[in-house]
Length: 124
Image (cartoon, rainbow, N blue to C red):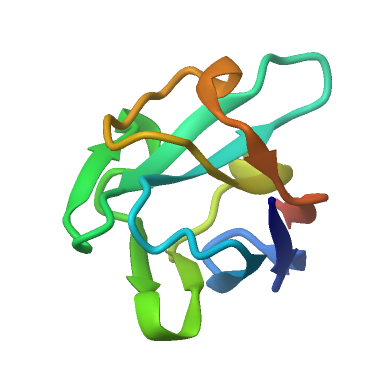
């Protein structure tokens, strides 16, 4: 089992930055791909960014390209999402998720382990 806890969300203004953190515990997940997802009210959960166990970024959604950066610290079992130049349309609950197996996926149904989420609200 893997337990994930996100933190770092909050209420900010457009143009501000936030850094989300995801702390993993339980079975080591340093070998598996990790994804940051978000879900806005009335919308489906979507993958924002993904990262391989080696630290290489494997996926970046077009709406966040150039503004968000994913990183991981395997010895500390931490994954981060640095979000700059935030926009109101970035408002959502953000989740980190760990997938069994080595192949990254943007499909949330492929992920076995999820955190509880952290709310990000961007005002205009």
